[in-house]
Length: 512
Image 1: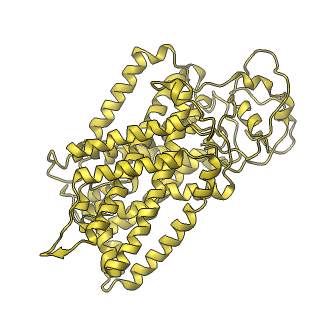
Image 2: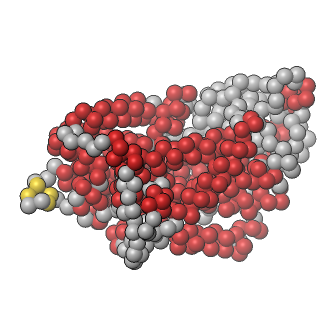
Image 3: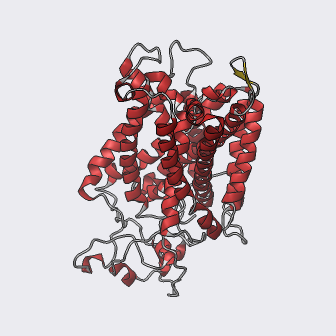
């Protein structure tokens, strides 16, 4: 995504000599500034900012500061993700695990997010951390670093989009089941795997239509995501506290840790609770009964059938918003990767639609890929679960690989800071992020329960191995001969050296 301003002004200077400047070289004229360090920002001139880092402006930037904030809140998806994944920590380690894993995981996510923000604010393009790779590693290592980072990020994001769509489908069908006739301890309607997949396909198509709209239309839609998210979260929390007839004690909620995983250790059962923080979806056959999603049953107990359905509707709506936001990020990453000819049919996927000025081809590539992943659940929910479970490790590894490279090569490759910087706290926060991701990724690959059976096995490690073998084989057999990493344009030649001598205010918003 692109942290650039909304101005559409252009530079009309004649190109300089036909020689591309080294983006890692010291900024010319920066030493003449008496007080502020050189930053990779150019106020009110998006095209010159992108040209300074080597790209021609192709996507329009029409998100305001508020729609950008709304987008960020939406993609967190807390109101939707907590109910969707509540069963995992509750079953593994009890109520205290569900509470404290979210708290600790959120603190660690803040460290990772801050580390990522510092890097992408300096190089604000649609490729995000993928593009940053070019500016934090030595030139002779850019291609392999960018290849691995790009594939991990793209596959992790696409699996995430698939999982969110499947989750929303589960939630919708759980709502239908919750409102069906209840007789002899069972609801009359129990969704099948086929029905769940078909609904998820419909949802993915709707998300695809939304993500294909013009940037201005997306701005108007996304503006509503945060208000609805925040108000619904406050309202539902208040309603559950006030309406639930019987409540457990605070001691039970905050201190009761159990060994529900069968591993024979409360500590390890507690660690397995982090699965809910990292994954956007779990328990894929949960809609066969509303209590398969404990949060749905909690809402039902608190508000009855009518009140519970209303609260559940807002949870579904917020999770749908999360899916739209996730797909928006995924499609822009696919566009950026295709722009550098790293995908099959890159020349088609990298095209920007002349009417919407958005990468429509990349949008429907992601929709098709996500549908293919969800269709696997028709035959095997275990296989689908394994693919969805790779979301967190793949994305986290794609982030910390760039953060680690920045720390390893910061004395060899000059990094020009952007408008957001961690300052002296950068190194310790980066180290915390790297250590946490390595640790939690190991946990994420463990089977959630003992004894391990084909049904409860965590096949994410198998999927990870397949992705690694596939991407690296493609690299050695073909890609290494023609792929050079994020490609910049000759437009960089047109930037006057005196433009680098001024310090400007930071930009406000994203390229989408």
